[in-house]
Image (cartoon, rainbow, N blue to C red; front, side):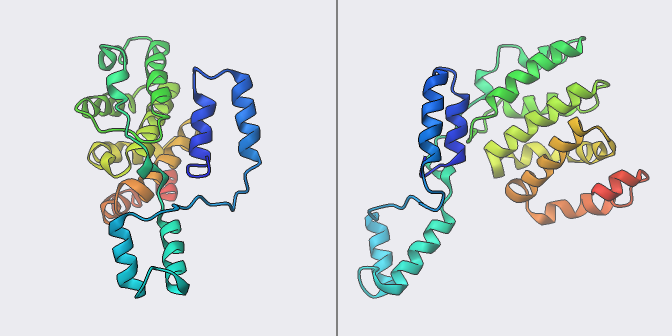
Length: 228
């Protein structure tokens, strides 16, 4: 927990095999840990020892060594310690067909399966990711707002878990996502705005957004212009 913080706590809370009493006890122990108590590596790799000696003129100690350690702490990414999970292979067989069922409740049931799997902190890009994203993109045009919301939530989970690897999958859906900014219902607008934030911070570089910004800031719908 000292390394992964909220990311690990969420995994514990969502774990299906842990009893509620165990989850409650772990949560109580997590709460006792000082938020400022950052976990730090106690040993360096040999390659890092050599770099530290070259940079600090010694064993990496002193003010220079401390500053380097602080920089390492700031740059630490908890996801680097985790193994990516192939969640697409865990979807039920025929998922990409069943998610387009005639009834909206059946569509939602399939989307909820992906939403649950997409809670994994680190997601692996697999051969089936493109086909899943094609289905999600089509569902953005569904007449049922619940289906649209769930589709966006699926994309949000994938974006959080895949980060930069999600770029090629999300770009084809971006024009339709910008169009959805005209939706006033918070069930759509909230996850949509969060998806844009995650994509902007972790998935796509700024220059990828320039063309979309330029186009949709001239949109005929005022809300689309404003939210863009």
